[in-house]
Length: 269
Image (cartoon, rainbow, N blue to C red; front, side, top):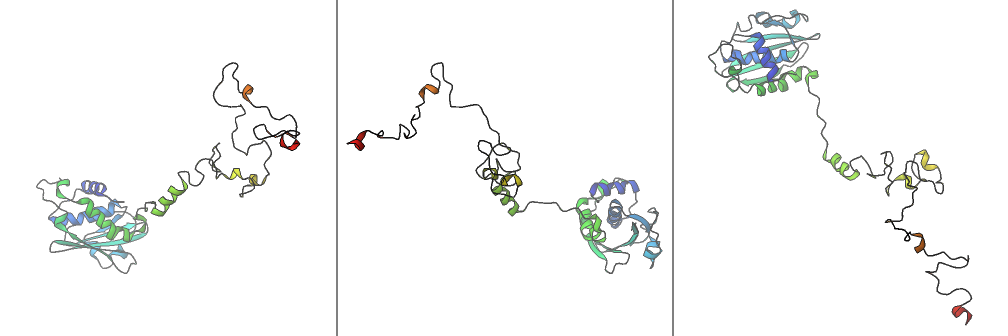
């Protein structure tokens, strides 16, 4: 794909001689085609022939001799097995560019306002000083001529996230879906409230259809077997001595809940 840097490289390597500003604008057209991978197979008088496309070869390449022999400009390019004819005509302060592919019906067209893109320089060979706004001109040539002649030159469209995708990400979380922590497939050891492993009977995963076993945590869940009761206690202050003993008789309820023991109280009154 052509840009201002590659086009300038083509101009410097060709070292053309310019008679006037029209020559400069026309040669940028040529350099943009070369920088985009087209091969010059005819130029000047042979390119003006009525059968220029048919008579020009698809192989090989020619130099730029005679390119500005006339006040109009003609170029024939080849890319692969396809040929393209480009003509430039100067009218007043504009350069009119027409380009057509072999077998094409309608030419692509661009009008270049010459004074916007060429500069005056008294130093021969100082090509940087002889052009201005070169990037804009090359972009216009791509959009109006090159991209339309050769679909393969179009840059790949950048994939930008739509607002709906952005909103969906904010709803589902950074990892792509709820729960953010403890979700199935995220590799987490933590189990969140929405984790399908909390409900083994649901979901399409085969492991979810296996009934949970008592005392066995779900697959992938980390369990620390070490007892943990809170802060560390010193000697004589272990948690055990402060526990309330459970009732020794099966009929008794917990001491904190019972009001009367069986065989005493108002029941015996």
